[in-house]
Image 1 (spheres, rainbow, N blue to C red):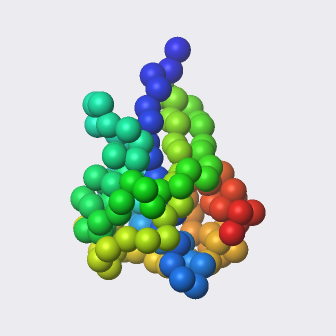
Image 2 (image 1 turned 180 degrees about the vertical axis):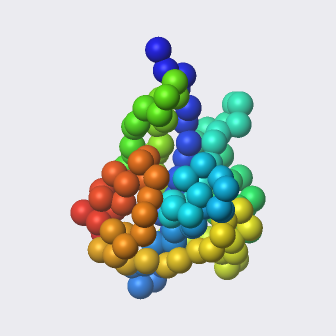
Length: 133
């Protein structure tokens, strides 16, 4: 039986309807691919608390948990890990996102996601976002 790993992700949506994606650093797992920012939960964290922390660490932005709305999730098995990734929409934050933990960032219209190679867990989220937005 695979170990369950919960990883949270955010669809930061700007006023023009673009969504922020981050390019994974070369040499990392899925290096060079594009993903929705977020990360693993720490022990005892709710998904919202973990996402607020991850966005601060990875992008140097401040997000209120009240501004996070769950909109989609993906579920996939990779080896002995079952990855469950809830995606939260966020339209309000403080600060300008910076690529602290990524190679680079890009603001992308959902219909253009197909131009950015994504890890297996992010692909279904991109498809769901295209349909929602």
